[in-house]
Length: 165
Image (cartoon, rainbow, N blue to C red):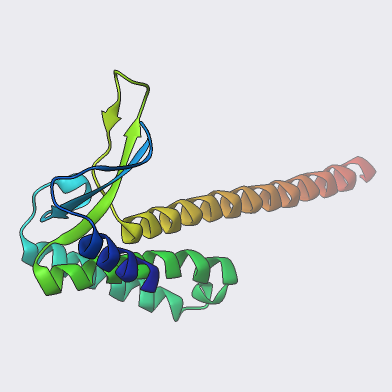
């Protein structure tokens, strides 16, 4: 959360509006932008973005208090998500928009696509969601493997019983 708030403060304190600052030419620039909507700048009323942020934060905090939320990997990805949600919520409550300043390009010149500007909070949310998806996939694979082992053991036991009769 601190990383998000400090980088937003620095970007909006030291960078100028309308100026693009190349960091890695053709890939990564710094450019100030305000996002009044939701993801990718899609329009949404401010009250709705604040409500969704409050609900998302509440769900994360609730989940952290459950037994599943005590696992270190779960705490890690939920901390990323919660930090991002709070960072953007602070902006929405303070100025009615989210401060963005990171600009990435996808593809090779001249057919580059300019990714919508984002910030550290957005990156934290993305990292948290990706880690959660990986954890859920790995957990499902382990459950399937255990169920397969149980089913295989039960079938083998039945075959042994039926073979002795």
